[in-house]
Length: 464
Image 1 (cartoon, rainbow, N blue to C red):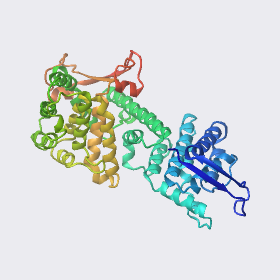
Image 2: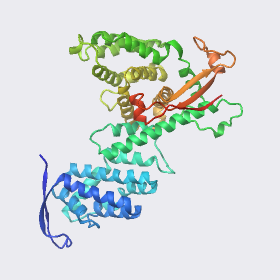
Image 3: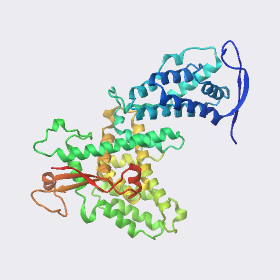
C-alpha cells in the first residue's frame, strides 16, 4: 500500500512564505517533485547555481526557486521518515554527479561532496524541523553512503592528497555499489560505468606496459606500470601466460564442465576439489583445499546430493566456494583466506579463483564484491601492515586482466621458436610477450556484453 503523507504548511513567523493549506501526497510524489526539480536545473543552470539551490534546499531548509521541491522535502521531514530522507538525498546527489560527469564538470562534483563538511550543519537551532534535518544530514555524512559518494568523486579529482592505499582498487569497491539493489538506480549506473571504465583503462595500460617495457630502446622512466609490483610485474605476467596449450586454465575448465555434465551434485562437489587443486604445486595449498574446503562443501546443499547438477546449483556453489576462500560474513577475511596467503603464494590463490570463474562466469561479479569486502576490512589498517594483502590484490588484478575476454597475451622465445611443453626459468627470462587488445563479437559472452564490447576486429598493442 502506498504510504501517504499529510503535509500541514502553516503561515507563521518562522515560515512566513509557506502557504496555509493541507495537502496529501505520497512519499513517491514528494520525492519525484525534488528529483524533477534537480534534473531540470542541472541541465539548464550553471553548476554554481545548482549547488546554491541544493544547499538552500537540504542544508538551510529555506525556500528554493521551486516551491514544489521545498514542499516535497518538508513533507518527508514532517512525516519524520528518516529512511526515505536518506534515500532521497542519496539519489539527488547521484542525479547531480552523473550529469556533471557527462559534462566534465568535475570541480562541481567535488564541491558537492565538500558541502557536507559545512560547519553550518553543526550550528544550534531552535527550529525542531531544522534540528531534525541537520541530525539526518549528520547521519548521512557518517554513513557508508557518503563514503561511497566520496569514493566515486575522488576518481575525477585532478590532485588528490593523502589518498588511501585502497584507492587503487576502486573498480572493485564500485562493484559493491552497483550490485547493491538497495542503492538508487542513478548510483548503480554511475558505479557500473566508472568501474568498467577503470578496468578497461587498467587492461590497456598493462598491455602497453607489457608490450613496450622489454624493448632495448624503451625509456623505462616514461613507461607507466599500472601495477604496484615494480619490475616483478613482467615476470609475473610471463609466468601466467606460460600456462598455455593443451592444459591451459581455459581448456581445463572446458574439460571439467564436459566431464561433470549430467553427474549428481555430490559427485560434482568432489570433482570440484580435484579440479581446483589440479596442477597446484604447493603442498600446503593442496592440503588446505582437500581438507578444509571439502569439510565445507560436503554438507553444502546436501538435499540436492542425488540431483543432477544444473546452472543454478553451479552458480550457488561457486558463490559459496568464493565465500569460503575470501570472506564468509562479507566483513572480515575467512580463516581459509588467511591460511592460504600465509602458507602459499598470492598467485596460487588467484589461480584458484580464476578457475572458479572459468567454469561459472556468472560468479564473477560476486567474486569482485567479496574482494571489495576484504578491501573495506583492511582499509582500517595502515599500508605497511597490509603488504601481503596488497600483494595478493595486485596479483589478482594482473591475473584477471590477462585472462580477460578482450585481451590476448602470447610468449615468444626468439632463441627457440615454437611453444615448448614446459617453460623453464631460463626460457621465461629470455622470452618476450606479445599483447593484443581485441573487440569481441557482440553477444559473444555475458561478460563481453557487460563490458560493452562489440565488433570483430583486433588491435595489436605491440610486441617486444
